Length: 236
Ligand SMILES: C[S@@+](CC[C@H](N)C(=O)[O-])C[C@H]1O[C@@H](n2cnc3c(N)ncnc32)[C@H](O)[C@@H]1O
Image (cartoon, rainbow, N blue to C red; front, side):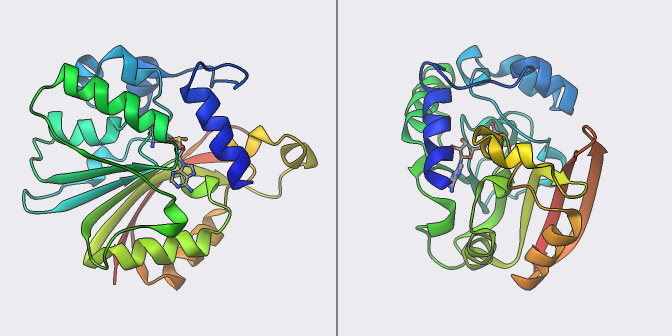
């Protein structure tokens, strides 16, 4: 499943050939989700093309300048830009994604549009995080948890790379109940954050077991099967 998801995003971020895009995206989606106006207006078009979040985590990520932030499954890195442009954050931010091409394209666009504004861009699998224990004070996971087949491995890895008291802020889809078979029969539905989505109880249990304590839970109905959720956890 991970291979299919990776290939799906490679196609989507490439020419878009053969990968079905969400009906609403870019600035319209950012505005709908409540991204700060400053961000909506400043982000270049080339980044909006690859903007695929499940929610707006910006209000819950408040790093101080000495902190380090990991944006895992960053895609084009719009959440990281929000921290710089609207949050005024000047500390270290690592944008990590399993798809190289999106990092390559986004890093080029950011360099051209915002000379002097720096991120680290790392191609990595969230289930095999290549970072030292306690390397980050903050982790963002926007639309990534549902995509990972081994969620226990992802959650324990996030617990490892966060320092004590560090904060995980995520957004995703949550399943309201059992899903009809057609989600499993449509392989792309995994890449749409649907087939691999957890219920709220499963998500809470996953992070409690991995050593996190819940801080915030914001939920909005999306359709008959899913809620859009933003969740915030602190490493105990
Ligand atoms: C739904 S998109 C969200 C992108 C971005 N967070 C945003 O808000 O635009 C999911 C992203 O996670 C990446 N991804 C999927 N599986 C991953 C994994 N195992 N490790 C790291 N990144 C992954 C995809 O390549 C894609 O860029």
